[in-house]
Amino acid sequence: MTFGFAPSSAASLSTSTSAASANRLLEPAEWAAAGIPLLRNPREVVSGLHSRHRPRPTTAIVAVLDPDERVRASASFTRRQASSDGWVFRNALLAQLRRVIPHDLRLRTPVRTAVLLYCRDGDARWTEEDGAWMWGLRDACTLHGLRCGAYITLTRDGWQVLGEGRGGRRPNADSTPEPFALSEAPPPLPRTGGSASEVMRRAAAR
Image (tube, rainbow, N blue to C red; front, side, top):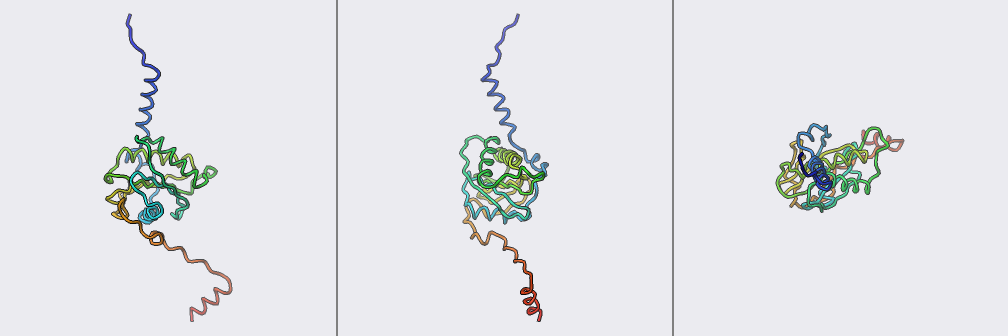
């Protein structure tokens, strides 16, 4: 006859929780294989968000872009958790999305894209904290009916779109935000029509 000790339920719960937490992050290869849509002009997006929210280290900015990459809504908040847990990050991002924009769950195919800019210390190399933010962004987008877009880090060295290899020195965590008007693309010219515009067109042609 042999004797032993069965693990307590508390110990089992602790083990399973830590194992689950360890999996709530995405490695760079997983992120690259996820088919994240590329930003046409990442610096414009980064500069616009930097001007709007003026982030400092531990500030996260989540923004929703329309198909033309115009920012339709954005929110910033400061990370308060000591551990890097994708589930916690997901809940924080989802709460901000629900606060600033209605969900698109009624659509069969998402048309709007959420991107995340995280200002942190250190250099631009991937960290487990970044992996947890990636996991959280992807899951929050699924639950809010959005496409999962780029994850961007902002450090004192500059900005970096992780998984794409694109980045720049400005803006950075220490730089002064550009004037808001300069960080935005010029608005499209208004469409004209009718007899008045036809008269103006003919006059210009002369």
